[in-house]
Length: 132
Image 1 (cartoon, rainbow, N blue to C red):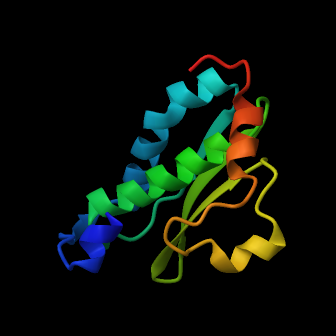
Image 2 (image 1 turned 135 degrees about the vertical axis):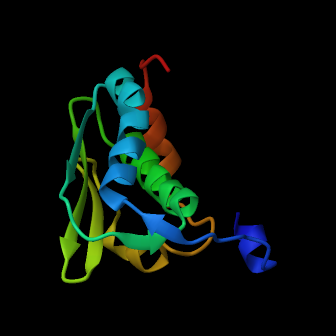
Image 3 (image 1 turned 90 degrees about the horizontal axis):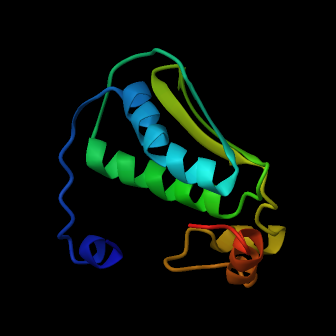
């Protein structure tokens, strides 16, 4: 995807977007994975204004955030996805009860392909003994 963006080949098709419905649908797709991992998955959406966007691209962003939240939330934890209207826009948040990102790594979180030094170790430690 990064290569397609850099080459100007990523097509974005904006259209009417029911953001609460999209968020709820993306969360529902992750419910079986959350259950297998022993993580509570919550969805909090509010009705609000229609917006315009590319449902596929927005869905991909939500999927990536959800996958990361589930990956780094320990068994017994919780991941919450919310979509609430704010003025004439929307605020979508994904929160979890995982360890979080070290403050020193925060300036780099949007660098392409950046992973924290302990990301792999945390993943393997968090999932040891879990069936996938």
